[in-house]
Image (cartoon, rainbow, N blue to C red; front, side):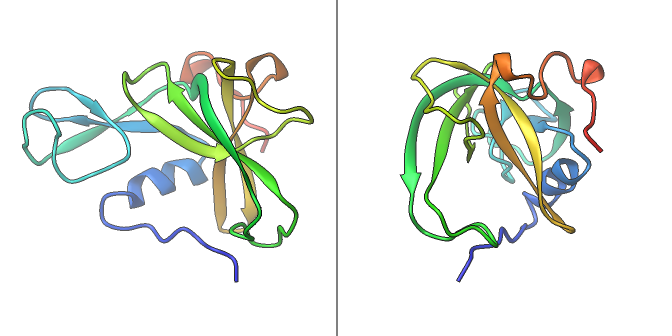
Length: 145
């Protein structure tokens, strides 16, 4: 059985942005602390309330695993999942599938790319930055749609 992400109250706006091929993080409405993954309370000042700030999905590879479980619909072969440290948000780690013919390298600069899994599910994957994923300032981004 394949796993399908189920948005909750906090993550729904993030998944909606990913579907539009936008990448954003929450920012505390009180103290301005950026945060990811989406959550109800600021980890710094503990207040509720946030706004969304679009950032470039660019970072560096921290680690990766080879996944043998069919968590992605229609995918049965093993695939790499990378853990990426975002440049725009200190301390933020984002996970996604690796989209390259070669293995990732620790510390390698990577860029996000949006993959339409099904008609109603888009995910953020990662490619080597030199491979031309979505990078740069969000206003410079181009869509593959």
